[in-house]
Length: 340
Image (cartoon, rainbow, N blue to C red; front, side):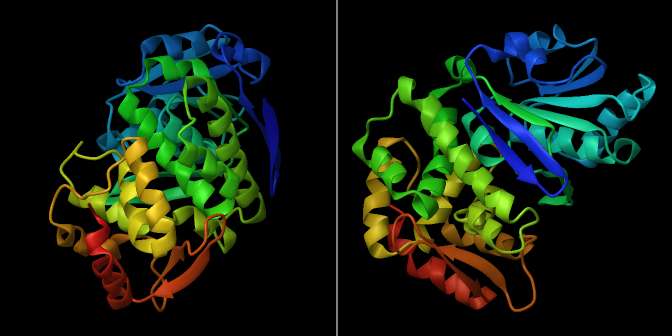
């Protein structure tokens, strides 16, 4: 399965193909110097499989976790490329989850003012949430993704065989982003989740459909001026919950699942709750909810008059409302009894 994503400077292909890691050179131009970026949580054989298809590969393995998505991590990648004589004709390939993708993409955008970047997501979350759209970034001073750039990949490849090595919890966390896309854009897709028919055989098509939905959004709004804001459904409060929790307490997708709960109608909530439970996603915050409140104002999407929040009144549609800090706190507090 494949489709093309258009952007201001051209287009790129997204491939979803089992076993494609072993012949990734059929899809990406790797006959040059290639910086392969992965992390310690990704099976080493994935980066090695990509390296076998490259003319001159260099693998950099960063530590697993958000701490690697930093200025120090960016410096490591740029320093490695400089030491290995990378030129503007060379490229970067991310092999891993969202941390690796964001970091590697930012390094590609900055080195020599931009070299080619390819993304090989190895988690459901990174495939659905960050593989397309061109967002890159690192965390700074405790604020998530506050430094970064819009920088489109030259290609994206998801090999569904990586699901075999993913823990069930990571698969569920990634599916939270697919559920998010269904709630805002695709009622029939949400009904598939409701029916509980999802199994290993269907994961690939569900992931592919969710990525297609996101691609359709970013094609129309590349730099988050309007429609792309809908992708933040579940993220405004979800990021705050993630920041307030202890390291590793909740995965990003689990926080997004929690972040959707206050921003849907009662009718939607009653349908969402069983889906979250069916896919082992949290519906209760494992600490005092108010602990997350101070982190709400750290969201980089705050602007004059407040922050744009996404509400789902009916499944398959959305509403964008600008809320002040007080209105946002009231919305979340009023939904406190939903976190069960």
